[in-house]
Image 1 (tube, helix red, strand yellow):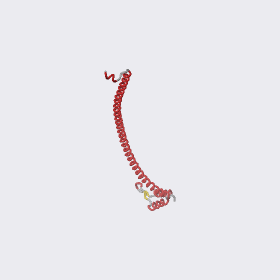
Image 2 (image 1 turned 90 degrees about the horizontal axis):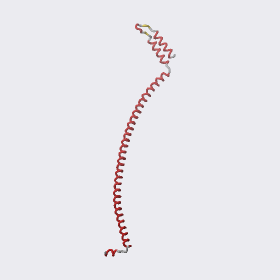
Image 3 (image 1 turned 90 degrees about the vertical axis):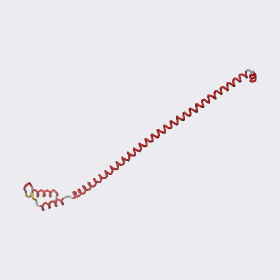
Image 4 (image 1 turned 120 degrees about the vertical axis):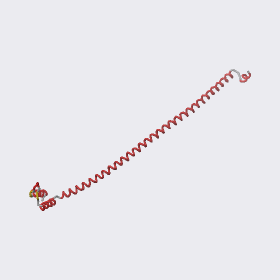
Length: 162
């Protein structure tokens, strides 16, 4: 017997029952239970399979929700770690920039000190060379005037005697 046929018989049994006041009906208990049993046995195997599939679907959905929550928690943790690592990198970059700036300042100071020292040394050397040059010039003049006086026939002795 098909499911629809059993349902039709069940409907007919309810409609054929005895009327009571306030719209209630009396139906044969045994007849209704017999029709329900026939209905159960008439249900195709797919209904049982559908129940099992629905149960499995519910289990899979619960597992998927649990997995999704686990993935979300892990992603949040990774995000926190990435932000923390990003902060560490930013702090390291800031420290690195400060070290480089300090090193460049020290290098400028050392260069300035070396330039000042070189200026002092070169100034002293210039003064010494100027003095030495003046003495060389004076010596050359002395030699030149000594040659001139010798060329005039005067000797040193005659110059001394006078």
